[in-house]
Amino acid sequence: MKHPTILSALTLALLLAACGDNTATAPQASAVTTTSTATVPAANPPQAGWSRYQNAQSQLQVDYPGELVAEAGSASGNRFKSADGSVIMSIEAIPGEGKSLGDFAKLRQAAQVKSKASVKESHEGGSWYMLVSGKGKDIVYEHGFLRDGVFSVLNVTYPAEATATWQPKIADILKTIVPGTAAH
Image (cartoon, rainbow, N blue to C red):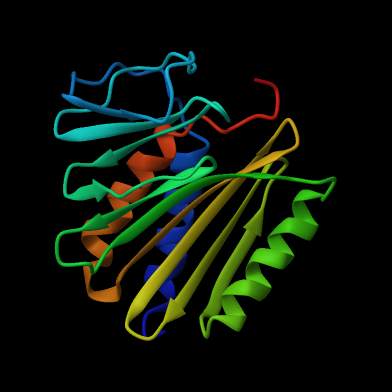
């Protein structure tokens, strides 16, 4: 990576955003995508121009920018894509099957390396991990949360030249995540 300082600043900003206060009220948006009619935890409405994905089975929830379009989801999560296909976001609730956060993060890092991504940074907290990788001309950002034995994993792949655009969007996305749970 040509600019390790920028990547470190990105990492710090995203870590701080993920640990930030999620109680601020945001303007009302128009679209909510749900996978079933069961109750999902309440949260502030998505900000203007954004939509909300909710997975009632796992209680997973995330808001995403309007330029991403939801594709057909699965029981465990969903994928979102920009019109030109240059940005791909996915969110998924994965049963932990007794794995520790550290072991799961190592498995995810190994999977990125196997896919020819070069892991630039990795961090762990008490209930989360984060990986930032380079893959060709793209940045692969992954942030996972462990809650009640379920790993909720956000993955965003975007062109490296769009870092200035996507860094703040990812920070905003992280503020909206309600991690999944096995108790439903």
